[in-house]
Image (cartoon, rainbow, N blue to C red; front, side, top):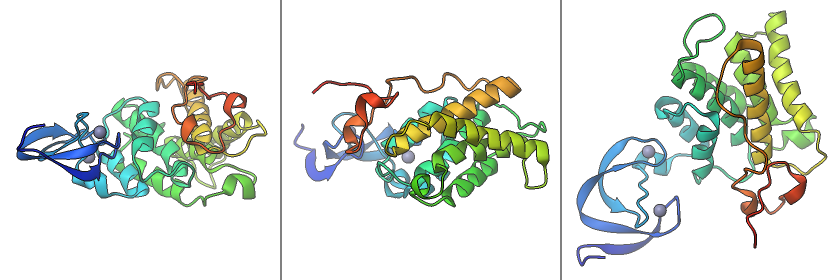
Length: 245
Ligand SMILES: [Zn+2]
Ligand SMILES: [Zn+2]
């Protein structure tokens, strides 16, 4: 560290290292939104988080991703959101995450809606709004799971479902039903596992019924968050990855 730099007791949001305050600014790319900003503040590991992303709560952060995320892979959108500290390990923000991830990837792949109109930022924001109305703990209290309903929200928007459109309702219900079917594991709730189930159900349905390719569904034994979950079901969960002691 040069004498022009000073370590402050403020941690990097990504890795927890103390941030270094330099004397001169340099262009840095925000790890969350990908925008380039000039800043004298840096993480020794190279992470940079812009002020907007630094200060946002989880739903505002998803709305920001709706506007700026360029990812074409729903799993990548999920990963970006789950890195953000506003996302609690379990919480209702995951109910908005599934439709946001599906619709952001569709928008960035220029996949149109079933009626041929483009997926817009407003479409994604509507998906986030609908997901955010599902309360926390719904999986245990209401016989359905908010992240699984997130698959239904994404598909309902894609097909333009309303309460009076029979065939469209059916396909949106199937998305949620497929996700809940995956969730028939008898385990304690995990919002990460439920998010993978929601993504898988929506991605498979969009692929099988409409020929839409959004990449690979979340793989078995691929979860990066097991060690942070006090209630992790470990080897009983299909996504658990044993990283050793
Ligand atoms: Zn860092
Ligand atoms: Zn940012």
